[in-house]
Structures are given as C-alpha cells and as structure tokens.
Image (cartoon, rainbow, N blue to C red; front, side, top):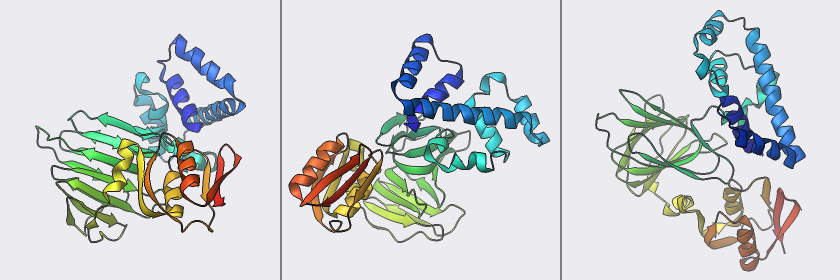
Length: 315
C-alpha cells in the first residue's frame, strides 16, 4: 500500500505525469479509503518539508537549495539535500527509518513480494529480491553499488576502462574478481551474507581489516567486527531469482520467516509447529498455493484473522 502511494507520489512530484496517469491516480485514490489515507500522509510530509525548508537556519543548506537547478528539485532530490544537511531530525521525521520512506532515497528498490532485474550502463546485471534498497554510483574511477537492505544477485561485466566494481553494505566492502555472486543484508542489521556462485570475491570489513577471498560455491558471513571463515554455499538460497523458495529438511519456523519477506502483512508460525521439517520447491508468485501445499504435507492449518494476518497452527 505505502509502496504504491510512494510510486504515485514520486511520479506526481516529478512534473512528468500525463493526463492518463493523473486519471489513473485519481481512480487509485478513490478505490479504497486506505489509498487516500496513504496519499494524504505523503502530502502531509511534503507540506512539512516545504514549511521546514522555508525556515532553514543553516546557511549552507539554504545555499545548496538555491544553487540546485529547478529541473532537479524533484521530491527525491530535495529530500536527499535536506537529509544530507541534517534537517530531517525530530519527531516529524521518525518515520524515515521505515522502508517506504527509505525507498525514496534508493536508486533501485523493490517492495514486498517484488523481484526485479536490471542491466547497468557497463553491462553488469543485477537482480533484486523482495524489500531491497540499492544505490548505484559510477564515476571515472570506480563502479560502486551500495546495498542498504535486502538481497541482490550480481553478474559482473568487464569494464573497458578498468574501473573496479565495489559493493558496500553497512558492514562490508566486497570486490568481485570476474564473477557472479549474491549479497544479503539482514533487516535486523545483524550483518551481511556473501555467497559466490562463480569466480571469487575479496571480502573485507567496510572500514578495512579482516580481508579474505571467498571462492566459488562458498559463502561468508560478515559482521561489523569480523569476516567469518567461508563455508560451503547453499545454492538453494538463490532460487528466489527464478521465483521459488527451495527447502530441504527446513524448519517450518525458518521457512515462514523467509516467506514473510515476500508476503504483505503479518505472517507467523505457532511455536508448537515451528520445528516441523519440510522439503520442496514453493512458488513465490502464489502464496495461497504455498499455504495449500503446507496444509497437504504437514499437520498444520492456516488461520487468517484478516487478509494481512496469517498464522500457521497445529491441525
């Protein structure tokens, strides 16, 4: 819901909305009261932003806004400028930690249940898993990807200018050496998981230290303090690229935790059935089919309090 509102709001603020899109926006707002509430919430944020920008006490911030070309002052650019100037603090902006507002700042992002594929300017291909925030910065010296949240799979391309490709997370600095690899940053901030499909990747802490080269078919966990020794990779972890969760003797509790990343709303597993084991391939595009498969193969039942509140319990 919020991701849809964000997409509409960003388009409306870009100045590029045509009449057909404006009509579609109005139809979307009229379709459900929650749509209109989400839209009004963005308008409220915009009004607070305008009020705050008119009262800027920071001369540097005022000059930054003044020097910004009018055509670049879209919603995202203004938010980035004010964030960089430290002007989005306070209770009015506590929501900035939420995914829907963070996605305003990301170059590429996916919402809950979404997966996307892009080819970058140098030919590098990236796949984004659900709820992912990714920034891309290419200049004359370096090609830089910053994964702020979520999971990406990267197939690197050789750069004619010899620029290195670097991937950063809050904990890690990763330099692929002609390879395909995936990077996952946990939403709880525990760390980064690197898995190498082919080639190799030099992994180190973001601020230096703990460097090691992770070879093909291996994975390494990286915390804020340590790059842990590489272990054999679980190739099933990248099945999401093809739209599946692949489980092999997987705890039901762990399976539901992973599935919850792809399903909107609240998805829970009763502790009484959390240790049940399951094996199979489950299609992410059809959560209802997954629930049906679980009820057929395990002694569980799916209880729905609302459309967005689902619990698996003992049958």
